[in-house]
Length: 261
Length: 303
Image (tube, rainbow over the protein chains, first blue to last red):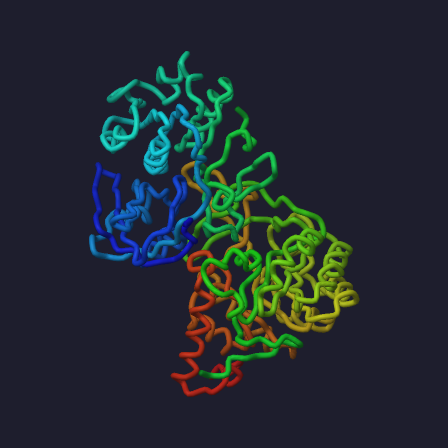
């Protein structure tokens, strides 16, 4: 059954440091988890920090229903993410979850390209895991600034063919994700493109999808105060007016967004 | 268990904890978290006669111990509320107030007339203090003459409890409170948000699309307490206090300053259960200090 949103104290089971500023926290729930869908997010409380007033939203990286844990992929950006990334194993984090909608999981076998940029890859792991359950054919293109920012490639390669780009050329193809040959003549082989990352990247991806008439869904990261549809701060402009990224999203079909692409 | 009940004009509140407009949606968004009927009341999202898209993005800036918002009264209009949202609120066994706003006096009247027909809505909170709209809103709440004009006009068409929500962006809130009382307010709620702004030094741009916005959260609590204290001395109608209430101790401070009830606002964003915890905490405080009733501490500040 789809899990209802809740606020719980989750126990930090592990804190894996991937590189200088990327961590994966594995958090254990006090009760059996309901179904959490790929693309949904969690809002984590940062304790004892006067300058971090609001919760911090993160994609739910993966869910382990056997261990009863969720994993959160954290890139250190400021005070809030630094405190969370430095949490001790055995400590507890107050988490509001699962929030938002999810990526569409096609019923039939499809050929799907996942495109992640920077910490945007966080919303694609759970998605890749779910997609292959339905025998979809998955390719995963990950873009980063530099080789050291390309993390979890081995993990992603369990679920599909992995391609990479780096802006400085230190790993994979030099350039942005849309410079990768995947976006060349064969792009129209894909039936869907799902993307999460910086907005300029997602817009470039959406433009390519539109050119090739490929269904495209993106996960937005607008700043928000609540995460469950009451503050109305995180709005995205859609063809149906302002929609909340936290409840109507974070995943939107790009044909619904008023993006100039 | 102490007696937490309190009367605000004709509203019988089972406890003095309400939720502030714009921070609690229509209550329905909290159904996953707790039984909303346990609250003394809820004040639903600011409603206008015409649908409003609200302001552009970004609408929020986190600040030290608080946040700025510039939502701009996004709502689907009073008629949509009456036909599509109101029926879902009938399940709640608590006081539901609708926060009513407008750009002109006629818009306030038209909105209040629609809400007046809804039996399960116990009252309105007249919003003359929204800092995030270009026309109306706060402009009505910053002079005695304009307060008199809008409050009197709505009083003529609205026949249940009318709370008037005051703006803190004024020089003498006591005088404006008296004007609202004189013009027919059954109760006053305060404070709405304080006008503020945030700047991104790196981009040299304002953080909010509207440049300025309303500041809320614990950062404004000392101002809110002072204003509740001033207003409660200036008027005879009951005062509903709000501004940065995060826990029961904060709430108690507002009762001591003269508030008969309180609204929990920004805290709802961070902890959806905050209002429920505050009810429990008020009871614990009263028991610990051997008061049998909430009424024993209202306005009982030792000077």
